[in-house]
Each structure stands twice: as structure tokens, then as C-alpha cells.
Amino acid sequence: MDGGTWRAAVHGVAQSRTRLKRLSSSSNSKAHESPRRSSPLSASRDMKGPEGKRPKTKNLGGASAQVESSSLQRTPASEDGGEALGSYWLMKSEPESRLEKGVDVKFSIKDLQAQPRQTTCWDGVRNYQARNFLRAMRLDEEAFFYHSNCREPGIAGLVKIVKEAYPDHTQFEKNNPHYDSSSKEDNPKWSMVDVQFVRMMKRFIPLAELRAHHQAHKASGGPLKNMALFTHQRLSVQRLTREEFDFILSLEEQEPS
Image (cartoon, rainbow, N blue to C red; front, side, top):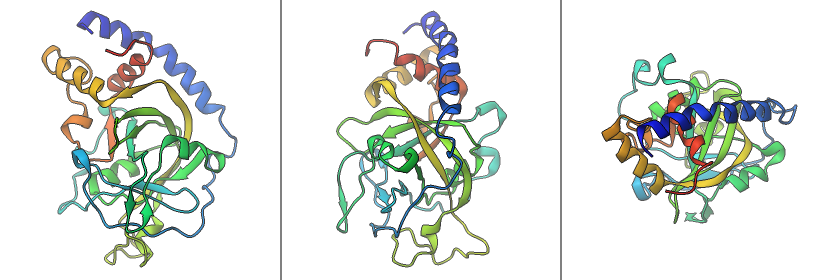
């Protein structure tokens, strides 16, 4: 896609974003309630998968998120975002069955659709920068649901934030792989948000296609030139600029490259 073409595509996707906002606003009227969940299943300690992605753990009620190892240092807030970056997100999850200490860590976008109110909490994040991104999220902000650590990684659909950051319960559960003995209930270290399914992408946007655009845009100055999916690959929660978000939405209207 040349410079003029991608600029036209990004401009044209504005109407698509307006339709998405309408769809998001008309979702279940109970969207801001916490999702129902029961006692969590046990899962494994942090483990790197392909491309540095971490496995996702599940609660019986569908509560889930990708596991990340803790950073040695906190990421300064100034590096985590700001008005210029926009409030759009990419969140990774594993769609294929994989056992960790006898627990299946699979959680796909279809699993999210199957949850009560198509809503779940995003728990288990143990990386300070990813946690800070969770804390920066606001109600009704949009995120791409990204399938990772699978045969064909890529963007499967869209979700929205329906509950802002609150303490991640798994950090206090001694039988949970995400348990953190250094975290105290009166000063919790780790947070999670609730997300709700919005829609599937009109077509699956594979990682290979995104990478091709990233490489081209590094030379041309296009929207994906600095996309975190390639510059900060290990983060399971990533911030997107509005230009990145709109460009990716425009791809679903085109034939695969």
C-alpha cells in the first residue's frame, strides 16, 4: 500500500470507527458490572512462548489474561503513554489448547463470546509497563483481541473496556500461579480490567500481514512504523496510536496482501 493509498484508507476508516462506537454504546446495558466468576483454576508460572509471548490462564468463570514476568524496574509513567499516543489498545491471548501443569491455558475470542455478558476480567499481568497500561485504560476504550502463541497469530476481533483497573485477585491467592507474596491487600501491586466482546474482525488480520506493513512503513513513514507489536514484542498489553488503530481497521476492508 503506497503513501497516498494508506492515507486515504485511514481517512476512510473514520466512518467505520463511528459505526464501531455506536455498536459499542449499544452493547449490553449491564456492561459496567463485574463479570461473574467462581474459584480460579491453578496454572503454571510465567513461561515464554514463541516470540516472547506468555501463556494465558483461565478462571472457571472465564477470568483470564496473559502471564508476564515482572520487570526489575518500574516503567516511568512518562514512558507509558500520554495524550499524543491515544487511547487504543492491543491485548494478547492464546487461542489454542496448551497444558501448563495440567491446566489448559487456552482463551480465544470465541471463549470470550461464550462468557456471561460476553465479558471477562483480564488478570495475571505481571509486568509493570503492561500493568500501567491496564491502569491507564478508561471505560469504552477499544482494543484489538490478538491471538498469540498459535499456528497463525493475528488480530481476531475487537473488545471494549467495561470496568477500569482494580486489584487483580490472583495476586493474593496462594494456590494461584500468579500469586505474589510481596503484594499486600492494602497496597496491591497488580491490577486488571474487565473487557467485553464487541465484534469479530471482518477478516482475520494475520501477524505476517502486519509485519509486512510495519517493514514498509519504516521506510515510507507509514502508520505502523513504530508499532509496539514489533518494537516491544513481549508486552501482552500494548498501546496503539489512533493512526495505527485506524490503519489496521482499514485493512479488514481490503484483500489480504
